[in-house]
Image (cartoon, rainbow, N blue to C red):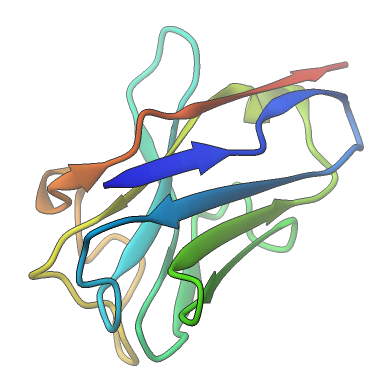
Length: 128
């Protein structure tokens, strides 16, 4: 079970930190990811992190967003800086017990359909 928190409304240039708590799931070592779905658009992958700490990012967020995980707390995070209006979306965390994205993994190697476990989402709204 995954549960996101930390969404909200901010002005352009602001920051937010999203959290995803993982319950009753073999968290360790598995690939964890953040996705987002802007209004009226399809859901898209934002970032991934492997059990070994390998991270990958969508081009649109690289340099502004940072994905991290705390294995001691079974938590996933997404630090979002310099937010822009186009970052407005529902943000989801996702994982799958059979999915790994460690060293050598490239962004996009796994697709949305490979992730079988999802949170309910948290809304991020950025006003310009």
